[in-house]
Image 1 (tube, rainbow, N blue to C red):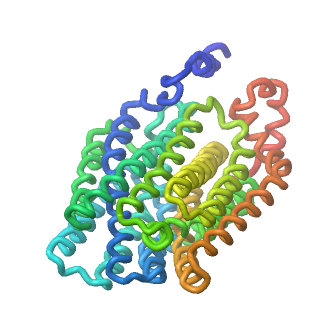
Image 2: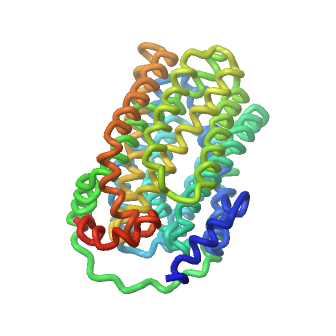
Length: 448
């Protein structure tokens, strides 16, 4: 028994930076972290350049929403299918293929822009191609994190570090993109993004991957899909987390699509202004990721999830009322903090309570809840902003996110009753794990 509790004792002795970066002790995850950090800077540069180029070419909020819709709608269709494949196929091999195809997509976009031959239909088609790749990349990558972490006690920290690298890139990428767009145009942002994929491909190839275990013959695809939906939406904690993510993604996330309008029309700025605003969101999100990484346990995250939905909504309300650049930057920090903590905390809880043979499918639904439904929100947000204005759209979005967070919190006690037996069984609640061991065997939730 003493040997079993040793990791927890060692972890309790950790403090400061060693506690925050403890997942980097694992070689494969360390390689992944470095490669992905470089690649994500390019990803954010491309996202900012794409939004600015579309608004420059069209001056249309609706077109911004349409391009975002086209680039993300494949996720809602294919992410659940990708989740099934993540439970059946070699995740490492699939990630190498997906990253290689993403490199090709970015380079094609760069060539078209740098040669001044790009037109709107090409932007939309290439956006759909990238959305299709993201639909497979995100759930497979989320599920693969578990395979890179030998000690499951470091899983929550690895997820938080994933969020930190994503938001460090969000801090650097938009700022660099703003300067680069003003100096030489959007094309070089796309070129840098394409080259940045080389880093993550090399990291994946350098990993030491254990031989794949033999798996039983899988059920038909449609049955696996149905089992994943039935399991996820039949278990109240997973269902509640996914529904709140869907609400925030549809109603709240379109604020990113409207960034060019906020920067240029409301705050009377330029591409630098837009880059700074998005970078401020990255500052808040990075702070949120560090906060999560510094936590020693997943306990308490149930309350964090709805609280951060309220913080995110409050940031949107404040942003809708601001006409000052400095205040808007502050509100973007708050918005970014609430957004990433809610999403990363949701990911951590899901990865902790999910059955191992359903992990890929739940991560597919998690991806769908964030990215798959977002295009509908982008289309709705762009259309609504063209009718009632961008500030009013942000105000309504923020108020609805606040209401969703409060509704989730109201049912938190019932949610905890389902999660507690799982935490007890896994020793996450150590002070009661021994006394209630027999009780957890009775209350253990079923698979499908």
